[in-house]
Image (cartoon, rainbow, N blue to C red; front, side, top):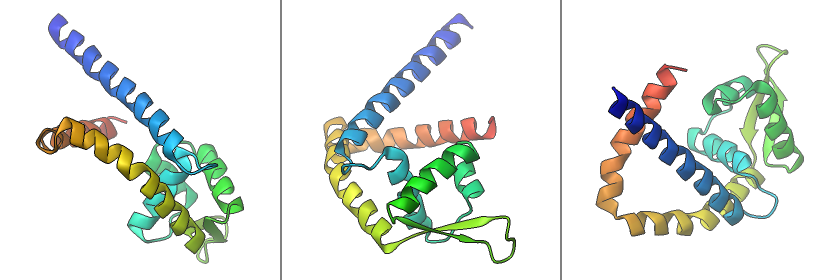
Length: 146
């Protein structure tokens, strides 16, 4: 049992440190004024290709509605998203990425792809491919326990 506890602590210590280091490096590589949270929302909206409510986005990113509203307000001021009333329920809003938001997301992606590609290359493609299923399973397990 003690070995399991020690293994768990080691695993999560490595994940948390890797997360912190990755966020710092990616944050430095992003275009001036763009935060990682901004890129993440723009990337999500680009990948899904559909409007989302702020509540849906908050749930997808596991953040509070207030935190998501703050991020969306900054993206709207920058012209990266359009926020409109929900035609079916005036109490809700819907968020869509703007053409400028797509360009900003593409520019951000272009600035971080070399960085993350270098890390994958250094680790080796086969090792990364072998690790991905374990990380996905861990994410799903953590989501189901949230």
